[in-house]
Image (cartoon, rainbow, N blue to C red; front, side, top):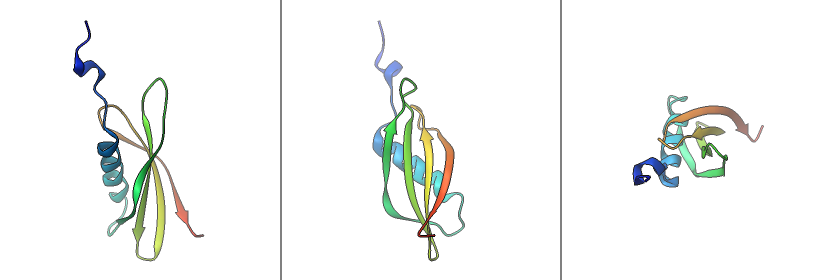
Length: 83
């Protein structure tokens, strides 16, 4: 039979936190200016697409990442807001 650990999944809060940490690592003085959002969950891989919103100085960025079930983050793309 299957054990509980075989279905372990990175919780939404943990996925957002991991994504924000990865997003802030691209900036020297970056700060989260808006709560991160899970855009969607990919099937069947169960990876979560997370949008993080980072501010550095007067520039605002959206950083998109994929977070797997072990809360490992993979960078996808970056966009600048208000350009």
